[in-house]
Structure formats: structure tokens, C-alpha cells
Image (cartoon, rainbow, N blue to C red; front, side, top):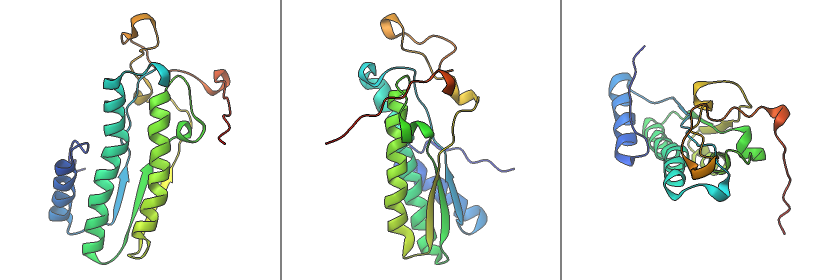
Length: 170
């Protein structure tokens, strides 16, 4: 397996990664964008620093690499497929990981708009929104305690213990 690492939060790094992929393989046919970071903190208590990190990784990073893949797919003239990884947290919202929920909601909408952008060129854009399962990523730094210091352990909230509240919008 060949691996190419890039900090997709930086537009130039996303461009370089796609360009290197084209150099190695001749074309880009599929992209799976699965950037995701977060912290355990209510949205109301999320720090500006955490917000910036979560937003630039989950939303900007996803957008930058998708833009570059679309450019490459259009140049290739044979379409392609882009899969963005959202989350059920982006559909339903989870208080304990508020900023993550907001950014994954943005990825869901990004999917819809990018699908419109790519359709005329045969580029399909879809979003997969996994539910809860235990992965290393689920151990977000926990800033929910007094002082907001990161504690080990992080996010381990299970669906059976999650209380969802629907909010009306007028």
C-alpha cells in the first residue's frame, strides 16, 4: 500500500497531494475525504482555538481536497466519485461534541452543493454518515470539566445514554 500524507487544512497541501496522486497513477477517479477531529465540550463552552482547529480540519480540509479532486476529475474528462465522511452527529447533533456536530452538518450540506457542482462533468458526490462505533478517533480530548483542561479518556458517550433535543427554527 502506498501512502501519501498531507495536511489538507492547507489548500496548497491538498493541491500537492492530488497532483502527486495524478503523477503516480495518471488520474483521480475516486476520493474519500474523512477528516475528523473534535473535543468533548458543549458548543456554548467551546474555545475559539478548539473551534478553529475543528472547523479548519473537518470543513476546510474536506473542501480543499474535494475542490482539488474535482479539478483533477474535470481535467481527466471521465468523471469520478467523491465520498465525504459526515457523521450522525451532523444530522442529529450531540451536545457533548457540539463543534464536531456543527462541522459534520456543514460536510453534509457541502456534499449536496458539490454534487450540483460536479454533476455536469459526471462527478458524483455522496456522503456517508456513520453512527457510533468505537474507534481511536472517538477519544477526543475532554474539555467538559472544570477549567476546560483536556483529560484522558475523551468522548465515550453511547447512544443509549444520549439525550437528544429537537430545536425548532422559525
